[in-house]
Amino acid sequence: MDLKDSLSRFKQQQERCQSSLASIAASQASTTKPKHRAQPINAPSAPARPAQPIKFSNDTERLQDINSIRKSPVGAQIKLVIELLYKTRQAFTAEQINDATYVDINGNKAVFDSLRNNLKVHYDGRRFSYKSKHDLEGKDQLLDLIRCHQEGLAVVEVKDAYPSVLEDLQALKAAGEVWLLSNMDSQEDIVYPNDPKVKIKVDDDLKELFRGIELPRDMVDIEKELQKNGMKPMTDTTKRRAAAQIHGVKPKAKPKKKQREITKRTKLTNAHLPELFQHLKS
Image (cartoon, rainbow, N blue to C red; front, side):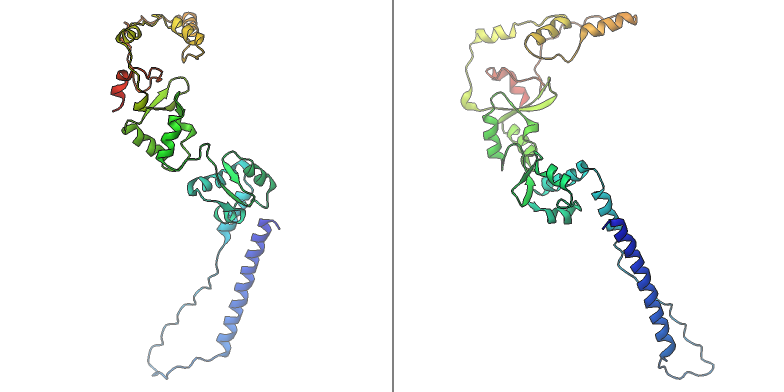
């Protein structure tokens, strides 16, 4: 039966019940004489109490919410369920999910199939629960996972492993256990292990060689070098200069060369030179 029909019949039943109760109350009032003490003739009569309206439980708003949710797109219903599983980190049956979100999994095959095959949902044949990419239970397991990724681990891969994972990442960074930097290519945070056991002593001449490398002065040359090494530049200087010539915009004067600095946004590829990164711990 459609929910709109159920709502309409519910309203009609309320009206019939209210009418019946009002008739019963009027009939009893006309046949029953109230017992009261005799009052003097000149005594003012007590004011009659106003009749109290009969109240009924009104479930209309809840029925409207149910109807709205169950007629929403499948994706919207899946989102409600995943949010419930993510926040609670508990396993729910289809009936329990229905009670909590009004999403009728058993009554909607499209919702059931999408939820069962969702990468963020684990279904054991009876209950649904949240499934993260890495099954971690605390800071120790998080650190072990990071140490298995010497080339860096994207924070987005672990941020939903458990509720306090981001706080634990900051705690590991403060303790000097990991480096938490930003990748300029993908604009995402990368966490690197900082295990003191793997520190390597680098000769001074190799350090001087590293520091003596000069970058190309022209951005076009820098972009070409990035492309040669399989990296996509964030800028397109050739295209920008061509557009400037078409619109008659004078090119800006080349800024003076600045000494290369390492910041928190620098991709960590020279872990063998730990002295370069001491200021990033703060």
